[in-house]
Image 1 (cartoon, rainbow, N blue to C red):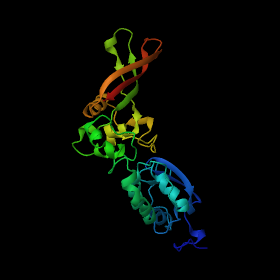
Image 2: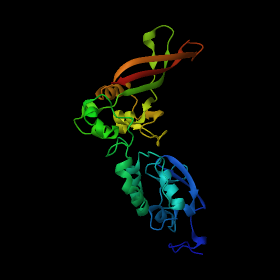
Image 3: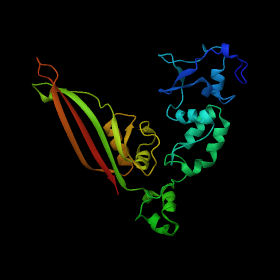
Image 4: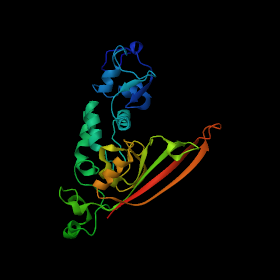
Length: 283
C-alpha cells in the first residue's frame, strides 16, 4: 500500500511509526502519520523521502529542525487535526504565522492572518486588547477619557507620547555563589550570575527588556497577567539596571539572603550561596 501522494509503499518507508524531533532545542515525539498529514508541507516533504540520510540530526539521533521550538507545539497541534486552537490573549500570532509560512502550511497562515492586528502583544504592531494597563492621571488619558481606557492604551504607544507609559513594579532576582578564604575577604573568588529572573506584569517586562527577555518558561502569559517565570538572555546586572533606568524605573527596595557551607575541610574555604532581589517602580 502506497503512502498517499508520495508514491512510496508502506514497505519502503524509511522512518519508524514514532518519530523524535528536536526543534530549536525542544524535543517532540509524534507519529509519522502526523508529520505527513498535510501534503506538500515542509514536514511532508522531509518525511516522504526514500531515504533519511539527507535530514539533519542532533547528537542523540533525533531529526533536527532549526526553528522556534516553543511555537512548534502549535504547528504540530494543527497538523494533528487541521484546526487552530490558541490560548486566550495569545501574544505570538505574528511569529506563529511566520512559522506557518516556513513549514508551508497555507491554510494555517490564512487562519492566523486576520487576527494579527487585534491580538498582538506590546512587542508587536497594533494596540493591546487589555484596558487595565492604561495609565490614568496622564494628559493623554484625560484628553481621551470619553473614548475609554482602550483608546488611552493605544495612544500611549504613539511615538512621543511619553506620558502614556504605564506605572508598575518590576522585580529583578538572581542566585549567586562565591568561595571565600578564611584569611581575607579580599581573597573571595566570585562566580558569575547564572540567571537573572524577572517578576512583574507581562506587558511591562516585554516593554522594558524586549528581545532580551526569555519567555520560554511562560510563553502564553496574557499581557495583563503577572509572571515570575521570565528571565533575561544576558547575565550582567548592570545591563538590566540600565534598561530599567532607560524605561523610567528607579529602585525602591532590595533584599538578600545567604547560606554557607564548608568547601574544603583542610583549607576552611567556604562556599556562600545567596538570593538577591531588587524592586523597581515607575510612576
